[in-house]
Image (cartoon, rainbow, N blue to C red; front, side):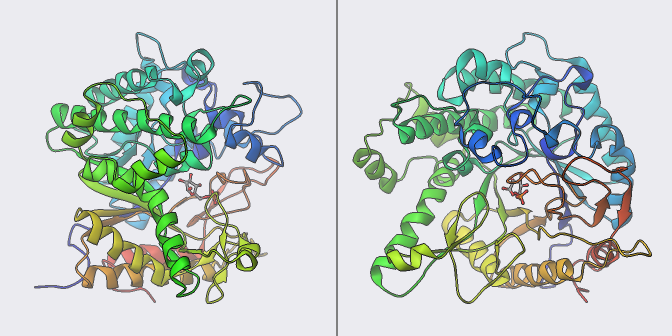
Length: 477
Ligand code: BG6
């Protein structure tokens, strides 16, 4: 028996409509949460839901509006991915291209045709589409009318959207994920779930009630997908990264477990089908009462996911020591205690390949389901040399370390079915709205202010990743 990556391992890359497509009012598309997130200092406040009015301000710059114009350039970009030998491409469907306001009776045919053509293009190149149904882009129309996911009506809007896309793309798309980084609702509630707060709100109550609606919607979507496409594989998607205790003080160990569970709660429901005991205790002690409809528990129990999709950028660290807590560093949407054993990226995200092996093993031990690493990568400020080359050795080094760690996890017995590094072509950063925080194998000529030709250029990592795929993960030099 050959040890290592599966013969049909899904090597590829990952994108999201809200960060690559642009064309934000083209083809009948309606506005979504991300279209109201400016770059600059107000961005975080909007993403967190501290936003009074749902409108676009003339004096702000909104990077999603044009992004990298994948809306018009997807054919040439997919051809470049094919040249690297991608076996799959993770993209998301922009909900508001299909239902511009979210509550129309009839879907927008132009939006449906756009994704038909995009999937056909992938299939033409033998690239398997992996689709996130909702990646940070809930339609503004229904948020305005019904207040975001805190309203139960969203379950119906979402399912209606799922029914349309499942019926339309069955036969083309087999891999689906219901919500990108579902746990992000706790950190970026507006971006993640269209949630805004009013004075006096018990924010935790609002967030967990909204999350409950997403969890029910996710389970019902899984059911529907299985009915419409019996061979479909439906996954959840977690912003993962093991929490290490900062020290062996049992209090730090418990704190790490508590933080870990804050994230795993969602996946426990999606994969094991019920709220765990620790969640019930947390709800009780924080005046959170999850309002359920009769039948919700059965829905959750009966429709668990087929695989665990997750993003991994870094491990995290937890401590109860106030002095240690002072030394926090940035991370994927929230800050973490700085781990003295790790280096950090230019944006302060800690770099920990071994942590990927640890995270994979933990998720495997807990869920015993196939794992799909649907995001990983290094955001860096690439320099174009005078001769036009981009020598991103730091990115190669980052990815090499993580692929080696993934290989170790596979040897540990973990079933990993695919790996799609994030932003395989440079796209807009979700957290900062910058263009210069680049992840891609392909450079896009555009700066933070929106200037540039949008020309595509291969980086050094392009040829390197091509060889990795060709050798099925054997050649990482
Ligand atoms: C994940 C998201 O949180 O991390 C992506 O799913 C995001 O949308 C990615 O882009 C990287 O984060 P950032 O802030 O560097 O773009």
